[in-house]
Length: 97
Image (cartoon, rainbow, N blue to C red):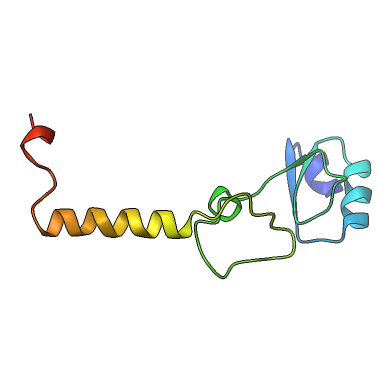
């Protein structure tokens, strides 16, 4: 991390490392640190939006806080769209120029 900082990096992503190590790294470098599964001591945090919105199933790492469960909503919407295209219901006359 120090070598990256000295090389001029503006930011370092710390992923899935112990929180105490992330704190030490954050204190040791002048550039920003962004954590993903690295505890609260980084300069910023990131979550993959598809994960935090529950857009998929089965991916639940310890650091993921899921703020919604959109899997069913998205799956149903895509299924309806596919059906409408296959049955030539979409686009219809009112949706065409």
